[in-house]
Length: 86
Image (cartoon, rainbow, N blue to C red; front, side, top):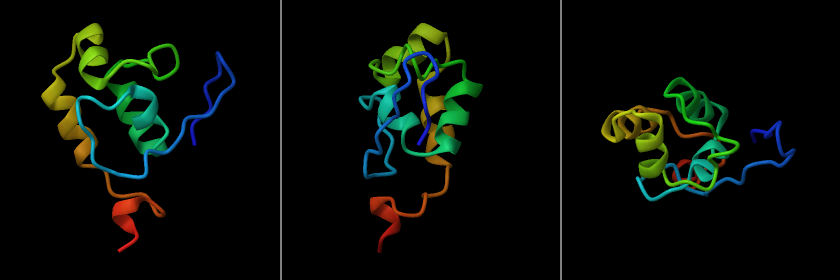
């Protein structure tokens, strides 16, 4: 899990790899380090913006929501995720 350095808390896994615009940044960032890297690449702050939905965060960062969702959707399932348990 990713640790937020400005508040010292850890994100929580969502239990699913499906990414939707209504998920919060914190939910997605807590899913995997790769998801966190995608958010960072798009300029989305996973710490202070953790309570924002992906739609809200992408608008605030000035990035296309569709591109963000596509990039997150390309990530492989992490071991232990609900979709990776068969």
